[in-house]
Image (cartoon, rainbow, N blue to C red; front, side, top):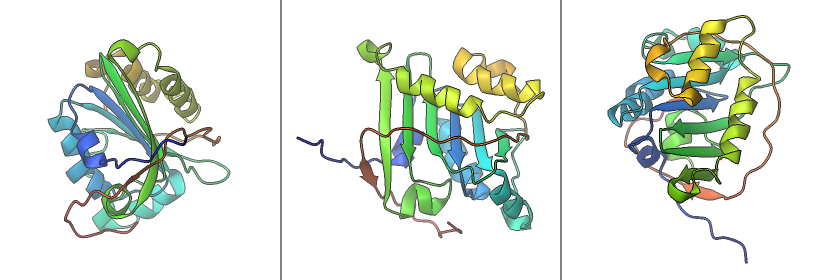
Length: 205
């Protein structure tokens, strides 16, 4: 019998303790929402080493609008634009801690609409406790997938990325850089429907 879909609150997931690093990948982004809501929620829960991969074309549009430009990129988190022949379209939320990990693969862009106002689909993978070793395969797949988009010959970006998985979060400086080409994400196992409400004005999706 097919597994029934369950509700997922991304807002609750962002505030879960026990994680020290995160990576979010997205096509569209509203960086004021990331900096004022998502990043604050992550840091308040102890997740202090954070990276964002975003489609370079869409990020260029964001940078052209003064009210949407990042204020904290390069100091509070690492921002990595990804250039590819098509669109950089994966939407992942990866959280890593010393004793557990969470991976969400879905349709949610890094916007208020994508994270809270729309009905979206996501697959949830967790590794913790007795399942820690047995559940690492999706995390290794996500790591290898994202690694392909790191900019060549920019060791600082690579160091910030690898620190997520090595646990050396304190030694990696936040950066603003990146460019690379695309691939496709493979599988989703569990479909979850969510519609968390943040109660704020909806920015561009």
